[in-house]
Length: 416
Image 1: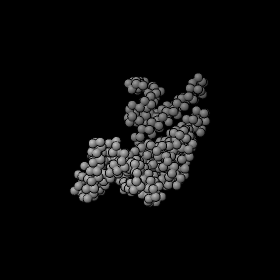
Image 2: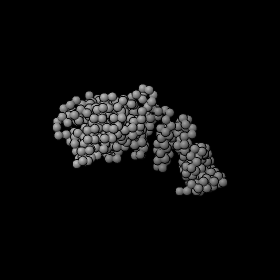
Image 3: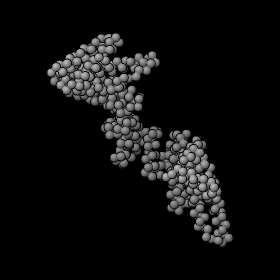
Image 4: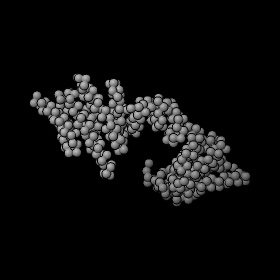
């Protein structure tokens, strides 16, 4: 009983000290920290924690902490002395304290007081949410922005004026919360807000990125529908375009990709990876046609692949992926011609020998084309095994076995 009385007194003292702080916030800031220590200790007591008053005092104290730190942030900004927030969870603690006070209220005025106090807390939640967002703590930022939406709902349900004055304000708050949840990879948490925003046609493309990510692991058809809807509404938004490109790449839907990548090339003319990716798509289409025996069509794709790889290297001459890809394109062309030459190797007639020698010379010319690109690629990524294998094989084909063996040794030193 004595312990209970002591904690009840702590609660009363905390209330008194926070009142003193508000009389002169500059001179009495020490009173605020005394109030915090008192109420933190009192609210841990099981019996004291069952009183609505305990939590209303804690709510007052933490609202005051938020007020003090918010003022310190503003002053710091004005005088070029950034203030580092000391109590990052203060607004959330104030919020949860007022919720607890409302939950335990036995009188109507106690419940109303809690709701009115939350009307103040919401401002701090937004301030601290922005601090968390700018610091890269997206989960904490979501918790703050989400609490504001909940406060607004509670006030309206209690017949009071909401803190978000217009539907646009509400949608903006939901968007902030959803964006933070997505960045924190809390897709299930973000989903209800994303759907709400989609229904009201909120004009932000990130909504559709979020819906695509959410559905991708759950319903591929809906993921594609969300992406298509976003692309239709925001045709100039490159982030959605690249999501679409990556999706089609993963699914191997290469023909559908070509037009989308060409759009990306137009939108971002200096983007090396877009050109290399378009080259890769044409390269893959080329290989498929060659494998199917359709050499004419395959060669058309080959020409396009070569074009985009070279364009990429014009923008960035030392881009590894572009160097390797162009080298591999020539290497694969040489390998294709090598197969044709092998078919002629058993024809010892004069005409057969002539054709064989022509094919062999053509094959060697493509290996010669590939060589400098692989050598440049090796300088950039000296431990890339695919590059080293290609160099080993090219030098073997050119009968330069000392160099081929050197690459073989290098590969062996890298292990599996």
